[in-house]
Image (cartoon, rainbow, N blue to C red; front, side):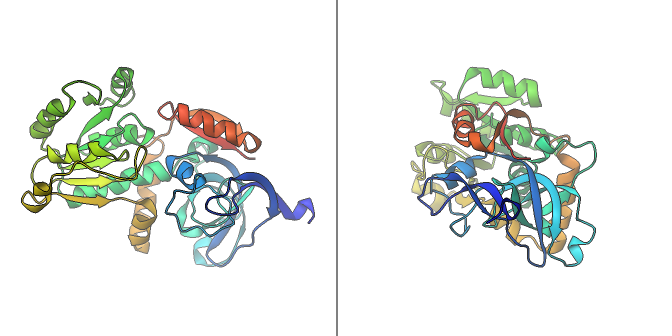
Length: 333
């Protein structure tokens, strides 16, 4: 294979295999798809799970990991939606086997947004996973008439986005944090008002008071474990535990059966891939239009550090110890 027909990428042979930097043929596009020359790709918790073989993604192996990023369209597979896209800078989401941790990536035309000239490619790379999740969560709140919610972890990049966007929609957010400095961080960066440290001795008592005062009815939980059930137990009747991650545990516990039987509480899950598939074409177009409007303001992403593709393991190690500092990016172009 000549270098002109191959690309450098992170390569994962199977679900349990360790990823490594490799050279593979540049992928070909089909109708409705775009070939993108990558600029940046962020590391998200979902990427860590996938790299560890713990993800429920339906990517086929072997594959290039990575679910979102930014770059330039170099080839289209045809179809009405791709007209005029060649040469455009875009941000996008993909679940294709050729993901974003490589020099080239494949995505569906309807899962990308064209970038304005004043939008930096680095910030644009983080336009989908967290921002779209927050938009999806806002949609859940609207459908359930929620006036207030709990989010854990509150100091994450997603949590900060949630605070900004939900505040604009008059939905209160109770933020659960782990360190006292995160209290000041949330107040300073996004004007959060309801913040509670889970290490406080009277944590659950104080959280129950907040829930009663705000009538918080949805608990967005990306952590898991016994605490998930403990928090659902103290929430008002009809409340929903909405799992969207498993940062600490794949299991949840501590749930009192009476909460489900008599108080009509429920446990549900939010998974971005599934939520996107549930959107019809018109709904998806409206959602992406909202996304483009928000990524410069309410859903803006803070960048912590950049690494090259060859420094991928260093990037992973850095991200794991600086998850609330901002996004860690893989610089590919």
